[in-house]
Length: 246
Image (tube, rainbow, N blue to C red; front, side, top):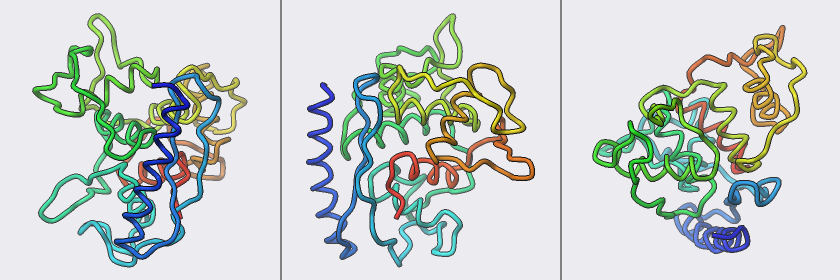
C-alpha cells in the first residue's frame, strides 16, 4: 500500500473511531496517529489527542488511580490493545511485554483499527501460526517494514515469548515512528548507564529526543536499558510515540 493510500485510510479510520468514542463516552475530538511504510516519509504525523480521560475504568485491574490509567485507556480506545483476558476484561499492567505482544502493539498503532495483518507464512522458524495465531501476521509485518530483523539467524528467529527489554523497545518505537530505514544520529552519552555501543545507544537517545522516554531515574540520568518493559509502561511509551495521551 502506498504512503498516500495509507494516510488516507487513517483519516477514514479516525472519523469512524471518533464517532464510536463520542457515542460511548460523549467525548469531542480524538486522534489516530499513523506511520507510513518504511522509509516513505520522514516522520509519523501527530494528530489532536483524545481530550478527556474516561471516568469509568475499562479494565478491572486498572483503577482510576493507577499510575498508567490514562495511557492504558487511550491505547484501548484507539485499538492498540485488546487487553490480556476477558470475563472480566483485564489488561495485566504489571506483566512483562513479550516480543509477540510488542509486534501487535506497534503495528496496531501504525495501522487503522481493524487492519488485518494477514496469516503468517512461517518466515520465522519459531513463529508458527498454529502456536502464535494472529501474532504471526503482526510479527511478519513488523519484519517486512524493517522494524525488526529478528533475534537470531541460522535459522531466522524472532523469540516471540521473550520479554522485551527497554533497549529493544527503543529500537522498535523509533523505527515505527520514523520509518524502518531511519538511522538516528550518533549518541553523545545522555544516559549514564547506556554504553556507547553504536547501535542501541543511538536509538535510546533518539527516543529521549522525541520525548517518548524521560529515563528511569535521575542523579545521574539513567535509562535502565536491560530492564524488562511492563505492559503498563508500554502503554505510556506507545501513547507518547503515537501522540494519543490526553
